[in-house]
Amino acid sequence: MRRKLIALGVAVVAVVALPVIAQQSSQLPGAKNPAAVTGGTYTVDAPHTLVRWEVDHLGFTPYFGIFGDVTGTLVLDPKNPSAAKVDVTIPVAKVTTASAGLTKHLLKPAEGGKPADFFGANPADARFVSTGVTVDGDDAKITGNLTLNGVTKPVTLDAEFYGAGKAPAQMGGKENVGFEAETTIKRSDFGIGYGIPMVSDQVKLDIAVAFQK
Image (cartoon, rainbow, N blue to C red; front, top):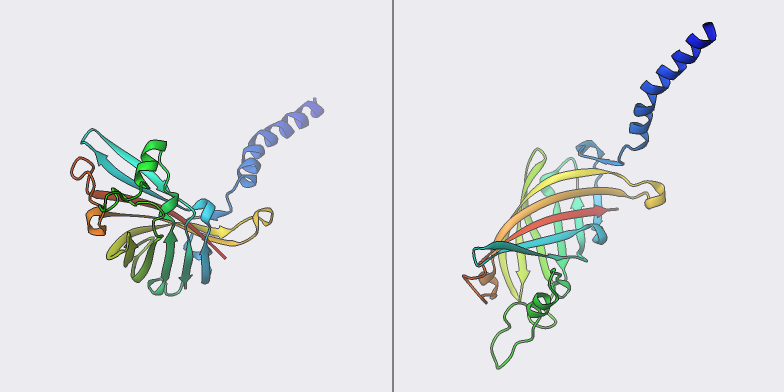
């Protein structure tokens, strides 16, 4: 009888402890914890950084595509976050959509002496360089200059701290920090006016950016 009680006790402990152990073993290396942010100069983790753009198509549906292979730097001091500096470059020539035909149209060369419908062939990279940061808890407004299609305009990003921490050793062991941001621009401000208003002038940008050092 004593052995049965001991065995039952062990089984109960196992049932209670296993979920806790599993939870601990699956704990993510990153968390939305400002204390995990370390200062210094970070570089963009390009494979895990995306810029999603969205336009309205004829009033029927939204349509979106993605820019990837972003490069750049973030200079960050967690004791003085408002002094942060961001400088990122976006390769417009690598724009991606779900339609091969549309992607081709976005990069269609100019013809007959007219400007290209959208970006044209071999478009220059876009670049955002911050000029100021205002921090409010986990949120921030990042003002800066966006250069697109050879035109530079001021833009403000509404940004939110997503997470920070150190990657596992088998994944490089680097310090990481990530953010989400969004803004809306008018493409006509940058000389891209094809199809307005059937395809909206307003373009919503949703950004997921990871930095590491």
